Length: 326
Image (cartoon, rainbow, N blue to C red; front, side):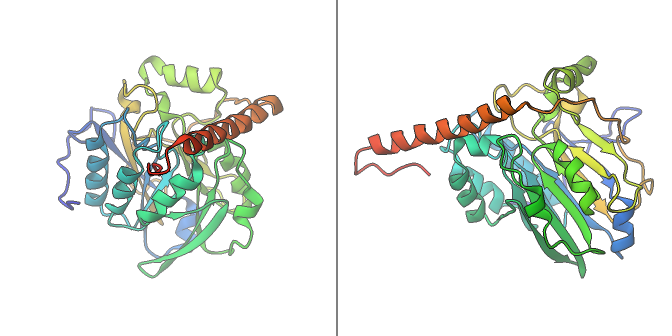
């Protein structure tokens, strides 16, 4: 993949978004105060989410995503779930996309990955060179700086195990959290994870007249819809911050309307203090939110099991000479 720097376009007056011709936006943020205490130099993290590799999103979008991300020269790429879209037919494209990133890649799964087959998606990610964090954490050394990254498995389908993910975290080491669902941040902050990156909402995909906040916040019941929430200036172990990305792909319609809904790459300069440079948005107050009922959670688990049983039936129906698509 090319490392050529992207051709940037000035953002509209009053914003600090960096627009690029392919319809992407690059948003750049500082880390938290806690990161300035544990890092002697910044670590640049590129956050992507909701690739949804499949027929809804054109294949060129994923090549553009890789090229633009590489041109931004991050030290680490993190991707917070929903790698596929309704099918395992594009797992080779997913693996090739992951392989194209120049920096190390860490990942957590999302609900679509479980609906389509988590083991198969996980194998494609590992084939592409990504490290999958399924209720686990890992420590990387980047430019001589240590960074702990905690990955929580998909909460939407009932696979999140926060206590397992944070077990054995080292105090005093810079820490970053990953979760497909933003609300998991509330459970990670008390464990010394000051910043959590997430996805799932696609920013609503239509952000005109704040329709995304109405649909995703009030109707669906998410506390965190898109952008920064919480506080980045508190000490680790207190409340923290969460960023919900707008995503890259789509699961139903490729429609994206409004400046907040553009395909997004978010850059976090961990170790740079909040306020060190102008950012495209400030921390917002969360929506009231509405936790899923036990009945709804049970229905989500049954949906995963139903899709799994359907895949097994299809595999059994294949003639012996026909290779299965994984």
